[in-house]
Image 1: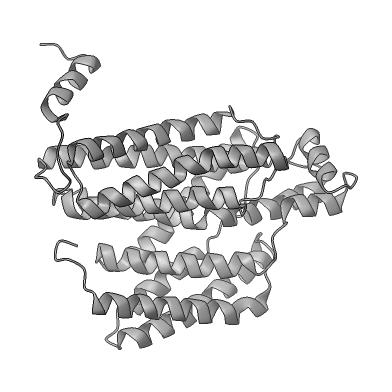
Image 2 (image 1 turned 120 degrees about the vertical axis):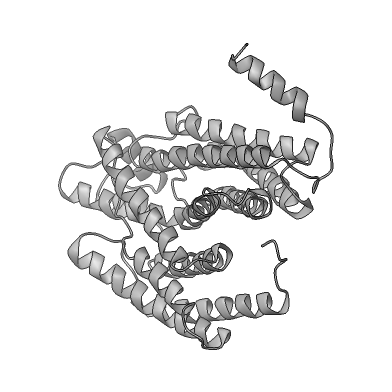
Length: 369
């Protein structure tokens, strides 16, 4: 019997490559295989993007850099899966398919925009640029489609909950990703102060020339921390908590939010020594995010009215988040933070969290979810 890869692909094509509408009955083995491939593609995108941040704090931008190639392989796999879902209708309903399609479309449109932006504006290392925001948005939309598809089509086996946790881990990482600029930046400045900067001289020279300064500490600070100090906690805590709320309610198991947050922290703790081992910069690791996961889970344990739980949860996230950042600043390293932004963080998070729980109460999710 032929067992080569080409033969297996041919058999798969002959069996499943046929036109169909979304929502068609999908064999459990096919659904499981498709969504596990989604995990592989997203894992490759994660590894590539993690290396990419460190790369750009050491070298000048290069479209053919190894991290971009790893990311591209993951993207190609995700695009291929979206095409398969679109043509065959297997493993998706209409909404999950549209989310996959729109998310992939936004991501693919953002890629040339990002290249053009770099050609025009030069380094543009900040994770907070408009073109990068489109990449995050596209990834978030496609991930929402994959999460919905997993919930509706993945078999009820031992991989169902761990795979769902993994998908929310990817969603969480995508939401937190721009904050890594400050987490790398604060250690980039520390490396300069030690007299052994992480960034190569060509990168430091290029960054200084962009703002018309010599290569000095002021130019390093501008290169490393160009974002206002209130952005890190406001964006990070509001986005992180809302993603964890959705993860907790979707996964539906106790301490699911903590598992997602702790998984992300564990990943960051594992990836930075690997990067350091190949002589790339390291970053501050947001260990305090475990506290955010615990606060979100605790808010779901009581029997208080949902809006009150949301407000109390927002207060706990805000207090623990700012205290955790302060503790990391004292004990290890963390980006600079404007602590007066805590009021804005609480108000925004309380408003969005309350709106989320009220909306879900008025429009309950389908039974399959």
